[in-house]
Length: 328
Length: 273
Ligand SMILES: Nc1ncnc2c1ncn2[C@@H]1O[C@H](COP(=O)(O)OP(=O)(O)OP(=O)(O)O)[C@@H](O)[C@H]1O
Ligand SMILES: [Mg+2]
Image 1 (cartoon, rainbow over the protein chains, first blue to last red):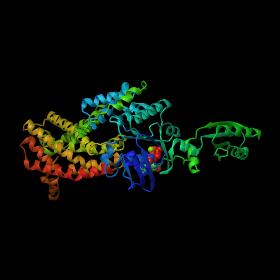
Image 2 (image 1 turned 180 degrees about the vertical axis):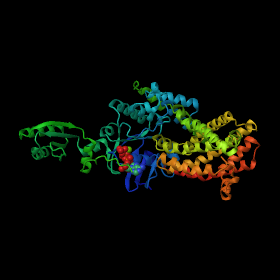
Image 3 (image 1 turned 45 degrees about the vertical axis):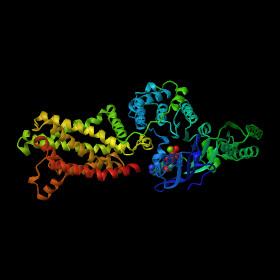
Image 4 (image 1 turned 90 degrees about the vertical axis):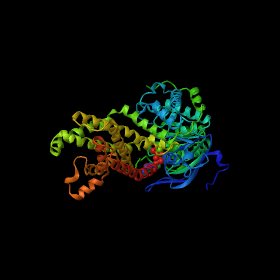
């Protein structure tokens, strides 16, 4: 059986151990363990092809795992798929609404499938359309919606009956900041009302903003797991990027930065660029001063939050693989 | 056309008002899927080409190409041909069921539906029920064209309706063969190709166009046991003479066999997708 973390299965929305999924020779998910406490947002952070969607599809009863097992809201994933389905809802990575139909028709259909009668279904659809700011577009075909509207419709369809556990696969990829904020607000409201949310993302900031706990996944494995502050502590609070005037001064600059910052300095493929983790912003200012003192000219510098690439750099010692999307 | 801000208060309210309805029955969810398929026709009326234009073409083509040669005169041949053309047209239409399933299955909305607590064959059954509506339209088109050209059934409206129902039952059952193919094939073009290859001998090695008595005996035997011939005979009898209970029973037996074999295979494949 599952080796359970402390607490009983009723504390967790998802308890999974050793999930594996292989497509031909490609191992998409390679032994994933998960413990997602109920009533929280769990962030699944990883680059293209990491295995996020495959994991979600297994947990949502759509794909049979090759190995491993899972309890979803206390029900065994493989033995009781119908019981699992009564607790979950899925908003897939690519529109999981019927694009030919209008927004309203989509919601009515889902409501009917959930057991509402015709009148209740219409009422519920209109209520959701209004809450999601889609009333004006209610009778427009979903394929004519903007990216943000489509996402909102997609999530609305997932909460026609509010699920106990909602899977959101990259809900904000490709959205503008305003639409993204709206989605965040929806997620927060959902969690406040008691739904557990498992969301995947390629953006550290998003995981940081929303998730109580984050798992970093790469090549089908979870390579780090913890709260946002735990993860940040492990990767430093920020990143200093320095662009030099002359490439031949890079080695010298790297030494200086490393000694002042007391952390590893990475030289990027760009011969003028250096990147370093920093624990305290004051050190960054000192480091720049030292560079100037050594008459190394800096054309540009920036101090930022670590990007996903940099998280990877730190966690794995190598950059996230360039995204080759080769689908078999 | 990005619309106004969505409202947090209203959002909260939609999340609270929660009286989870009871699970709907199998028939109810199947009908919901059927309704969805029919709704789509409103947005894509070109979906109806295969049940309107195609039957007209088939009827005209076969009547005038073969009518004179085979039966001496087109008006005589029509009495023989129209029931057969009705069968043939509807059977050809069933191929599109597999093709559209093959296209639909790849869509994201399927993931949503399959992760919902609904009876899992419902999307398929609903799709087939909606297709039955399309088959009915095709039948009516053939009959109308036939009547215009000079087809004169000698029985009553009840027998004619029974004939159409019989064709629909058979087509619904046969559809499961094509849904199986639609799930096995990777592309809709391949689905179309294989389905047509199977369908051509199945429809032409029958008594739809000609009476098999002049054929070599082995072929005649093949034609006689072809379920399409049994159906055609039953339909002809219903339109010109009476209820041919033997032929009708055989049609039901053949239909039951198609469903018994191919519905479970389809469902297995569908669950695995
Ligand atoms: N049906 C499939 N057949 C073959 N290979 C697949 C299939 N689905 C996924 N893969 C492969 O498995 C790996 C993991 O894919 P997955 O879709 O889970 O990644 P992801 O983390 O969701 O990526 P993205 O951010 O691009 O959505 C990829 O290498 C992908 O090519
Ligand atoms: Mg994905």
